[in-house]
Image (tube, rainbow over all chains, first blue to last red; front, side, top):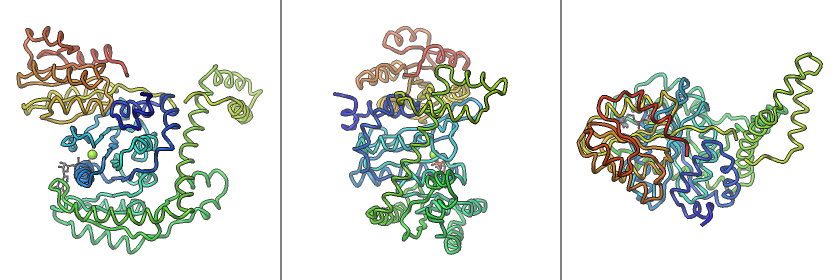
Length: 344
Length: 134
Ligand SMILES: Nc1nc2c(ncn2[C@@H]2O[C@H](COP(=O)(O)OP(=O)(O)O)[C@@H](O)[C@H]2O)c(=O)[nH]1
Ligand SMILES: [Mg+2]
């Protein structure tokens, strides 16, 4: 059977291999992704973020259980940080999910950030597309969870859960700094601890104060040119009518998960309703394209410079200041554009 | 896409013994040598280890066994990987393993055995020299 057919048959060996090619940036990955694209778009994509230790992996384990009980197949993408010193990583999220190791309806894959900031890896979008195309019905994404700039997951996921834990004043600070914007559902986990109700009240208060004043794309675009492109990539595309919910859980005892599933279902319904609107669809697709386009430009730009000693020759021309780097950059881009895309 | 290959190693503790200090030390040393180490905690069955190794697309599996059950558990992982079409994933191991058991384990497909007293540097070097990204 050819590789893509094996993927579409949800063959684990093939799927695991493809994710490696994607993670390692091998040319085979991109060719396969092109062929898989028509098959994607069916999965429900759920993002889970929150500080390290807040219970993301434990909660993910609970969510796997619930979706399996509904008969859904579940893939998990779990991201942990790479060490900035060695480039290595210890990926331990799976420890809390090993009850599912032998369930053929569950696929769990750990990734290291490899220097990428923002809570995911550079290729998590591709990973999720691939799993979606392979027919995994629910894709759960557990982010690194290092703080306030983890907004990427919201762009990729249909529904984003933000975990909080009781008794941490600084977390409420983090809410001010943008987490508020990305949460569709706030999960106050470790509700067995003192202060959970207080955290809920503080969240309610924050929501009353500061939700819903997001610039529209038209407003963002107003800033012109390059900024507009970046802005469009970062635009928050989410159902306008949705008011974030707050749910209390005790993940390691499986408490409160019914309530959480209810909130997830309610958001799902709202998301699917919004997805019917052409503007919403276009915004999502625009965002998807811009992210891939940006990565493509960077990758092609670099591989051009690194091939045939282009970079070396450009630098040689600059040495006597006869040629300026601006013209040389223009010429490099023009030359690059005239070439057929390298495989990958 | 910029090519960036990393070694991925699963460090696993099969069987019933409850000591994972050694496994964690090895995991950290491999991490410090720039590898991505998947760690799954205690009490893993060979079936769980095989399934995890495949899903994680690792290049090698390191088994730490203190319980004396290495003669059963290590070959079980090797066999399990082969049966699932993932025989190219290398299996190595360490723990409390008598010298006499080493040759029979290697004959059953375990690539290397580190007996008590082996330094972690030695293990890291062996991995670097013998395991390649698949
Ligand atoms: N007290 C309490 N501890 C929890 C709860 N949920 C998870 N934990 C514990 O919190 C620790 C971190 O959990 P983990 O899921 O690894 O967090 P992550 O880093 O966000 O993925 C573990 O020791 C869990 O057992 C909870 O509801 N209450
Ligand atoms: Mg975790």
